[in-house]
Length: 288
Image (cartoon, rainbow, N blue to C red; front, side, top):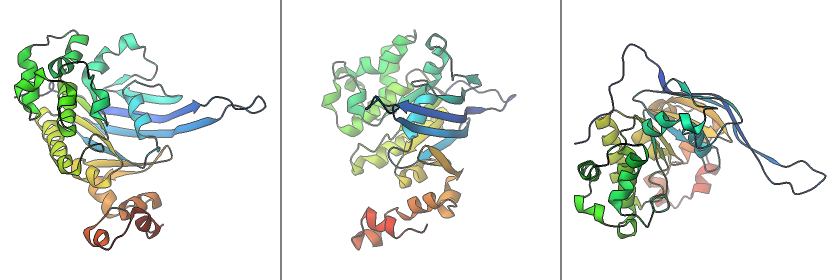
């Protein structure tokens, strides 16, 4: 049984994550001496708050800025302007040498487990790696406990990533993320690369572990039904902006923004699927 994250003080109530007016622009290489370099506006003044212990979803189509936002929250990228505060600390301009607390308390699960796991390392070493890097004891008991918590046998630690299925590899990624006992877990499209048959299993596993360990979860997906299954509150992103935020049930039942209404209307239903409706058909027929 894994131990819950360190108890949080009830004396001070503060958001686990708060971002304010985040802007991220990327300058592309110049194609002409007479024209300025083109600029991609990945984030256009994004603001949001995620409370401690909350399951917060971010949904939107590919290219809307979801992953850029996560990278800034995790200090893997830097904002052009704006502010990102994690557990009361402004990380916007904090140098890497002062980010040890963030590397311990915030962990990520990536979209493609095969590309995020080192194929040259055994699973036990992959799971122990964040503990070693952060100077914590990496005992065999801890690794075995993590493997069991994600539904894998202890002897799985002796094998390599390519010897597992996609769903099993994602379980290994989750175990690695939980190794340093984080308080915040960020899942970036964690089931989109998996077969439909195993998606529900991995989603239920994440949900159970978040509850058991009292984690704050940020779950990013382009799949509306996945967000609805996992998250308490959701932010809808479009073209680098958050266009709507609210309780998941409310946003899906009574969306207010035209883009959100299009997304909700595009969720496949059995009658429409049996009738042969495609995604394009559903979007054409969505209210605006």
